[in-house]
Image (cartoon, rainbow, N blue to C red; front, side, top):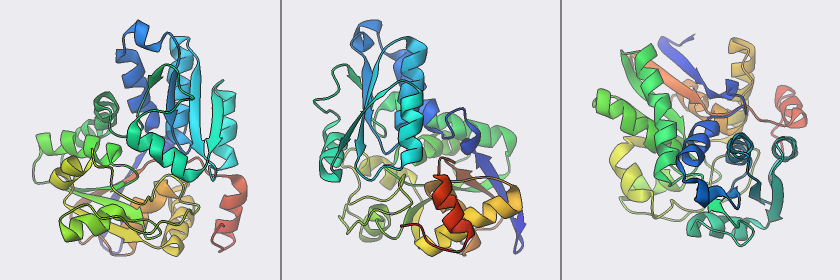
Length: 290
């Protein structure tokens, strides 16, 4: 797309079989695990997309999957998890976040696939960076939604290995933008967090295990408003005929609203497209979903 003199390319991870990039890391982690590690099943803590990735990979491996989800997870994603045959354990947000911090939950008896920090997961995500470079060797900036850091770390590791001067910009919703705050201060910093329709991004803090990685790999972190994100969902649908969820539209929102001061070839990663039809209808009507 050409917007205000800028060439914008879209990396459409929303077209993956589960509608999200998460299938890459989940499949890589479960395929690499020794059979005895997954004999009792696999699991993860996820708002929805990693859950679907783990459920998909578990079904491929012929083992059960247990997914711990926060109580605000959208119904569209819960329905998709169920269709893939996984069991869902819904918990309060604080308990869900604790599972992510500790990389475990009592409900998961077998292999816990961390949605962010496991190296096989990040390596799987890194294939996005390789594909970006294969398709667009002249890329100058890659703009990536930021949830926990696994996506941007994987992509940045791959892209910068091939072309070190490529800028990598992470984008968060302003309703929970800890990386933006932490990079500005040069140290991890907690922030206020309000759940929103951008359910795949935004949190209270940068994971301690991810801070050294993202501090080294991410050139800049920016935040966008919910209004800008909703407008980007509409923009992608109208201009590119692409359905993006809230988190999936963050990169595009940052670029079209001038948050990314780059020139040249810019790639926006559309990380997922799993959005409730009711939320999409509200956005098309010009409202912000509650």
